[in-house]
Structures are given as structure tokens and as C-alpha cells.
Amino acid sequence: MTQEKKITVKKPAYLQNDKLADEIREIMKSKDKLFFNVMGSIGAGKTFLLERIAEKLTPHYRIFVINGDVATTIDADRIASKGATTVQINTGGGCHLNAKLIQNELDKINIDDYDIFFTENVGNLICPSAWDVGAQLDIVVVSITEGEYVIKKHPIIFKGAQIAVINKCDLDGLGFNSDTLVEDAKKIKSDMKVICTSAKQITGIDELIAALGIKI
Ligand code: MG
Ligand code: ZN
Image (cartoon, rainbow, N blue to C red):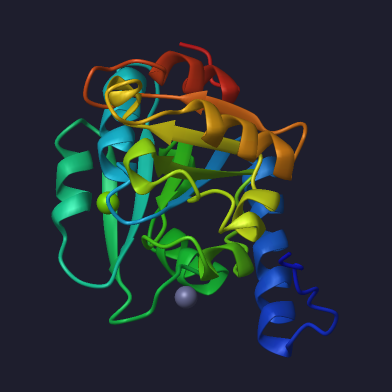
């Protein structure tokens, strides 16, 4: 059986990051802003989901999305086309966002010009979990096409998140199955909110927005 390794000693870089992340959280809270960190694997549909979320929210709220990507501005451009303001951070090979990168972007804008903030973190299920970006809620997105073990194999990122999104659920029953993934997420964290979505068919998006505590 596999045994999860416990990190008992935190490196100073993490500690410094955590402190800055707490400061960002405090600023957002004091200004009554919402800030969500969207993590997930490559190809899970993070960008597509954020497009759907932006479509629903931008008639009511001013949305700012920080896209982390190793290269290109494709994702930021897609989300911007739905009425959100976006900024692309090209991490140049870096595989996660961190609090310093977020702070750099927030320093360039007036936070009061926006209501709700999102990241689209760099696509992978490993290291974004170790780097707090200062969000109020962490969301992990996987899709049912990633295989039945995708959640079991990445317990740490799910443990740190409050919401698990299983995307591409329009394929549920068509050779893919969401049941095991939902169970696995709840096994890792009994109070995890697990939401099945289809960005393609626009299902589960309202439920996800409600889970974020946003009223539309
Ligand atoms: Mg993307
Ligand atoms: Zn990384």
C-alpha cells in the first residue's frame, strides 16, 4: 500500500510565500473581494470552465483573471473574449503560480476596479498545491477522460482544496464514469464539495458558481 509522505520541515521559500499569501488574503478580505485559485491538470478544461463562469458573471460583476502558462496568451485571450479582464503570466517553464507573481499583477491594477478575482494556475496536479497564492478557496479541476485513478494518484492537491470539479461529464456513461472520481474526492476529504460539470454542454456551471458563494 502506498503511504503518503508527510512534509515535516518547510523550506524558507514556502514560508515566505505563505506569509505573502496571507497578506493577499487579508487585503482581499478587507476590500470585500472574492479570490479563487483554479488548479487542475492540463486539458481538464480549466480555461473552458473559466470562459463559462465569465459568461455568467460578467453581466453582474467585474472579473479579473490571472492566467499562468508556460508560454502563449491563448487562455487569457479566450477568457477575455467573454468579458473578463485577463492577464497572462508566462512562467517561462515554471510549473506553478506563487504569491509573489500574484502580488506583482495586483500591484499593476486598482483592486477596487474589480469584484471577483480568479487564477488559472499552470496545468498540473503536483506543485501548485505547495504554493499558496492567497485565494479564499482552492478549486481542483480534473476531467473524467483522465482515467479512473487521477484523483487517487494526486491526494495532496485535493486535500488542500475545498472544491473538486469533475469536468467533461457530458461523456459520463459513454465509456467514462464519474462515480469513482466523486467517491475518491470525498474519501480524501469528507467535506469536499464535488461538482460534475460540462463546460461544453454548460451543465454544473450554476452549481459551481453557487459553491463559490457568488449570487447571480
Ligand atoms: Mg488553460
Ligand atoms: Zn511548480
